[in-house]
Length: 274
Length: 161
Image 1 (cartoon, rainbow over the protein chains, first blue to last red):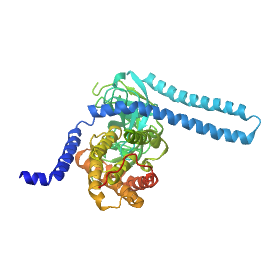
Image 2: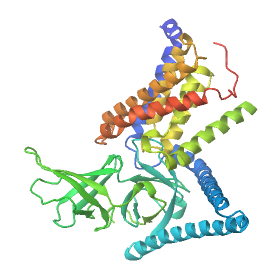
Image 3: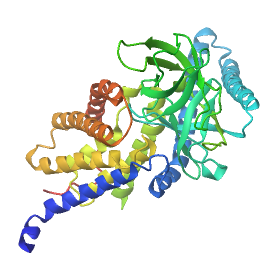
Image 4: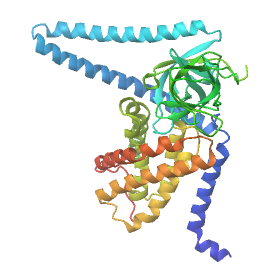
């Protein structure tokens, strides 16, 4: 027996190693809503690096666009090259400040309409996979954030926090396959659950065929479950299909928020079933 | 010690690119998976004692900022590394075309492993609609990056098999 084990030692060790990793995966399936020490540790270590990387990327992008403007100025007026360069740098900086101001003003207006305390967060990283939809933001448990808190943008619902480390957190977007938000159609009050379908799309499920739903209807959060306050915009119905058989109708929803261009968001200090 | 720091620098650069720069400027299926390319490189060309642990670590790091299931990419990358390390003896690993082809196939295998694990063990619906259309573009982009990265000098001395 021992000789058999020694002879196949390498194969057995490989199999045990694979089994151990599989068990880690299986045991963590239930824990998908909370960050364990390993994830917290990695997120803590990588958050400052990601913030630095984002800052460097922004600086390089600004320098590159300044260079393109400089070329255009050189072509138009050689004599005033230095003056125009200085003025263009000020214009670019001013435009950036104006756009940031507009975004933050919209966020502040949103904050003013909410009765719940909230915290503004910025995106510092994105999911690198084509089939998971999460964002990394620059605030964490040291700022009072916990898993399950809803995340909003000026246009509506973005998602909720799923993994929280001391100085960074991950946001599960509403377009991710694991996302589910209790919703209702604003016009007819038909209820359902908005689930992510990938590719920037969502679907509204468990809406019975008898309910009145039309293309163009606004979909808002129903407040059921206590995660999202009632009445927050989620999206707009883009397709409705009622099959001959089955209890539910098929509804596609386009999110109200432009997920691809998110930079600043609000996290509500609100726990589920609050 | 210096080769270790060089390897760590390459790894940090790959993680930073994948988290910040690439998602900002490239559409979803056309973002290369640099960590998977590193895993294939470890399996084929660096049969170091700790390469299996390195492949596992790369998977854990990817799970920490991609998806919500810890262990998914770790298991996938470990399976890919184990398979490649067993086959590497039979392959001419200095061949650039082979490396590119293996990266292409490893991307497909990794995505299919992810799909199987998610379909069987999670409650996410409609994964097919997201994963399958992105499969070929992602594999092609990974192969392209692998062909460009093939000539990057190896910071660690390769052990003789």
